[in-house]
Amino acid sequence: DLPRASRTHQPDIRVSFEFFPPKTVAMEALLWESINRLAPLGPSFVSVTYGAGGSTRERTHSTVARLAKEGVVKPAAHLTCVAAARKEIDSIVQGYWDAGVRHIVALRGDPQEGVGTKYCPHPEGYESSCALVAGIKRIADFEVSVSAYPERHPESLSLEADLDFMRAKVDAGANRAITQFFFENEIYLRYRDRLQERGVDIPIVPGIMPMQNFKQTAGFARKAGASVPQWLADRFEGLDDDPQTRRLVAATVAAEQVLNLVDHGVRDFHFYTNNRADLVYAICHLLGLRPKLEQKAA
Ligand code: FAD
Image 1 (cartoon, rainbow, N blue to C red):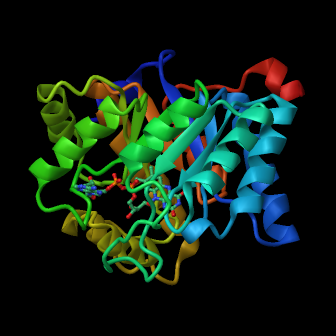
Image 2: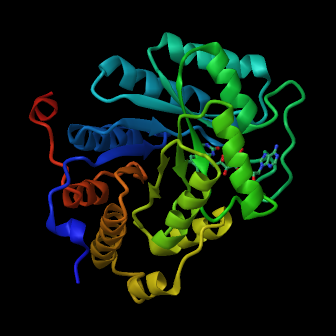
């Protein structure tokens, strides 16, 4: 039986897209090609990540500033507070405001020694993502998104502690949460309900990861604390050397996931694009999104 949503046009769906800043000229060309393909779908915003420990500070800034200048889509800049003094972070934030950027995805970031080691705040830095959110709001009236972990963050003591921490981020001023990717919709729906019970009333936008490469994503998921169900592994079985079929399966799996979420009342989706447009474009098409003509022309 097809999910109900797949049989109807969904005009009230909103999407956003995440990219990473390019390292090389070729990657830069691919990034802008992908943005230009997805922009006519009218995303709520397009976000650009910030490399571990601030390693892409300049590249993130220049990508986001270019988006703000072109004015076709609203940009959001990811920012972490790891390994930086408050005054450095504050000047980055002010720089974004001056460049016309009005949305920041505020994160603590991973410890500099790598995922799994203990996080130590910079002695003069923001001690947590909550402090960063409050700091950004003090500087200017930014829209601030934060992360959310439906299967809890690997460093959290328990799911309860994680839910409490999420509440603290909202109290600090967060306007929206974007989740770590997940593959079992039940996990997300239960998490959203539990946040609502705690009085968290901001949108908890599911982060959707189309699986370009199953093996790679499964490895990444393990590190990030996101479970990979056996049924999903079964779907990609035997396709390691067959990228073409793998991509068709990946589009189908992600489309099933989002359409099922639509059936559960979800209307906002954030896509991890990996700087590639095609799978995400196909999934958005199935969600009922069509290019807006004036943006197509632009
Ligand atoms: P937080 O939400 O601040 O903390 C994660 C969990 O740890 C909390 O839920 C809580 O349980 C526990 N915790 C943390 N601090 C405390 C405390 N003081 N007291 C009690 N409990 C605490 N990383 C990048 O480097 N660049 C990016 O651009 C980037 N973008 C991301 C976008 C999204 C949507 C997501 C989900 C993650 C992203 N990350 C990024 C990864 C993120 O930096 C790591 O997961 C990092 O380990 C945690 O940062 P955070 O802000 O998500 O954590």
